[in-house]
Length: 251
Image (cartoon, rainbow, N blue to C red; front, side):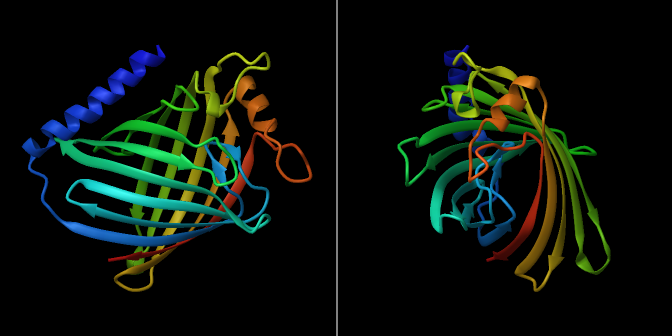
């Protein structure tokens, strides 16, 4: 199953790069620099910090191609705990939008660096249903699947309200945790409910406060999420409420 999943995703990435020019994407260059000030670092339901996190990011796109660098700075350790590098390509066919890419996760204080490839498909209808499959071909050697819906509302004075809901499933991905006996875990993982408000400051600068709630979707996931030891408590909650503020400069 693992090898089959990897081959399918690798084939999708290769075919996308080879055939996407047929769909006539316009060549346009743009970039952005942003920073998130978060109450905690939450990733796929995992609490990876127990205090505030600052997360800067810089990205550039050329046509459908994109590159991004993202980091996490932990207030408690006063150090950068993670830096991720992403390469991706986006295109659309009729009402279906595709995004394929590669993510390299690096951790300065450990040797647990890992890599993922992913394929995402979204349908341009109300609620924009989206399905994304990540495959970790390094440390995790398994998949992580996320299904999501969302909607954006245009408000007066250029404000925008974004609402979203997602649910995930882990498939033998050891980065996401294992059974108590050490065997691979395949089960529903977590759900996220989020809301953010986009506030334009200038044509190029925007501020977006956000709130979110993550909950475990299975007993196995609850055990895994509660077993991640952080800070003096040595234990996390499987359900967590968090939030923050994003500041973005587009150029």
